[in-house]
Image (cartoon, rainbow, N blue to C red; front, side, top):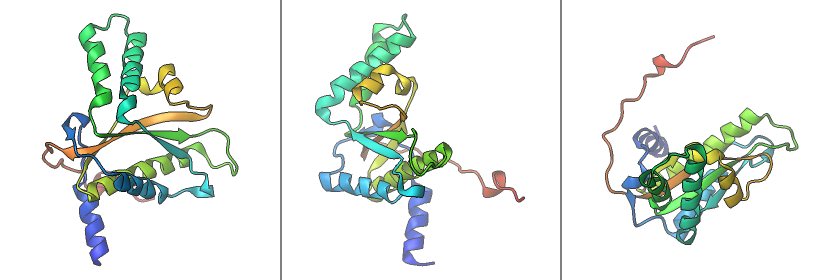
Length: 192
């Protein structure tokens, strides 16, 4: 095996999702954030549609996102307690770097199937996670019911055919879990 292959295998097999509450400063520098986006740009992209875009959520906009999380909770649960609402708000302030991944699934030319475009979105996100891991940062994805909230669509100016997929959270891992047991290929691979 080449050194690149050994490094890639080690990187892929050691990556783990780190919860945002376990991510702290320092986060990536501006140059490192640019490298994360360059990694996303290397994702497979049939038709060169770039069926994804990413939105940085800077610190001075976290309060706006916190209100979206709170309003989304209140919309779906009129009986939410003040503690639950505050917990929803707090989620916007956890990770040093917060990025919304947006899937562009509306009509495009050439007409690449939606599922194929979602695969491209997933590859772009995974490339970013692996790139963050290679820089020794912790990273994790978060989503939830607020992703489909009209308040989320408004805040992020999502257009028709765009969907908020998940947040990418990046920072310095204050704690890591023990490596999880991964399935064996024989558990999920068959032959035609």
